[in-house]
Length: 78
Image (tube, rainbow, N blue to C red; front, side):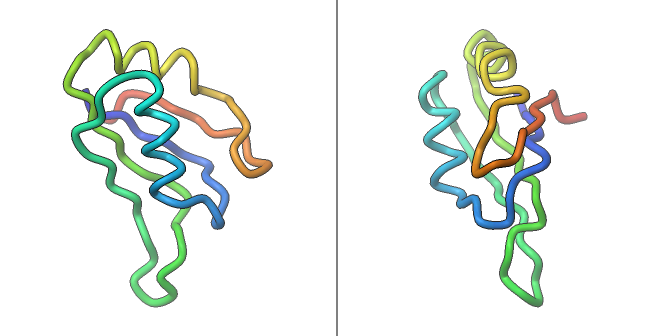
């Protein structure tokens, strides 16, 4: 299942996001979206988790949690 993670602080790293989701299960991919000109985060990422039950666990546990003073939003990517 592919999840969209939004409202990330510009200082949040791909490693931090991956580590959060790995705590809920296996992560097959973590695509952190960066601005091509500045190299800084655009504030969102995509996380792919092959096991749907683990992805649903991550969705329920991580949605609206605080990361670097930002309340992140996690939802199924469409």
